Image (cartoon, rainbow, N blue to C red; front, top):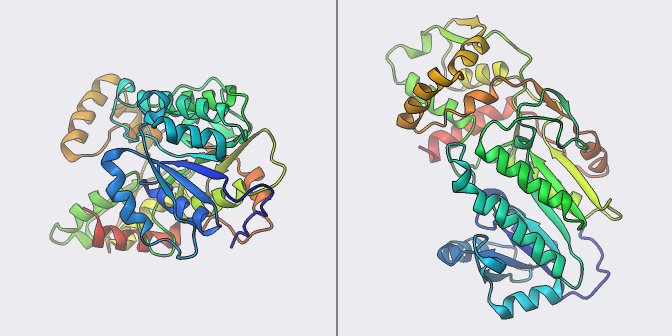
Length: 370
């Protein structure tokens, strides 16, 4: 377990956290509170009741958090003058995790939160008397269509974004980098459920594969049906359990003498391929028929062309599956994690291997998600 950092200032310093109602944010807030940090949780009025319920199960010794009603979409974060003034005087650290995530939305629908909201958080941090460090939750989506090795020191390497969400995360990270504030950037892979319990909050990413296999399993004799699997085994599938993301963030944020700008890749240093993941998912669903390897990337390239993609998108909308995921299947990129691994070396925090977790993730999906 990460040891709390020794206090160097007064204990009344507040840590501002956005996104506390989210899957990652709620877990990180609980962890930081358990370290003794005094949290101020920015929350939209409509989500306040849900947040109140989440914090009822926090560690009993944790300082009770303050819920500040506001909105990333509003000038000055929609805070009251009193709440804003208190933050400007006492805020010693900022964690910005709030974002809108949906691969199907266009740029206009998510820019107000993901980009403009980040700008407002940076504006508040810049005005704070204690000069707080900003811990910004980014994403591997900033790498767009970049290939090869994408380093923690890389940012703009001439890549093109794959969708509006990826573009807004790129633009938000650009604002953080240009702010001149002390900042830590965390680029997480595709987040899946807890490595110990399987807990997940929604169907996303690989869970669409589970949904499809659930339907196939209902077909009579499905366990013996032949299944087509990718022939290629070199396309990395960058999945990362939520508990690793939270553990790593809490530890990295607590390191002394951080560089003014630090960037961490919260990814599996030895990612499985999609072929390996898909085979493990077939096993978890007891689909043990013959597996026929085919070069499916050729099919994906065809489906991602403008004409066919319009049809794929219509089908995806009917099945409630984002067609934009297909573009990720054409990438050949590895995320360098050397700096992150070195920074975590003195802890017990390691990214769990994905393949042994697949049965657990499937079990939770089948029990709790539709």
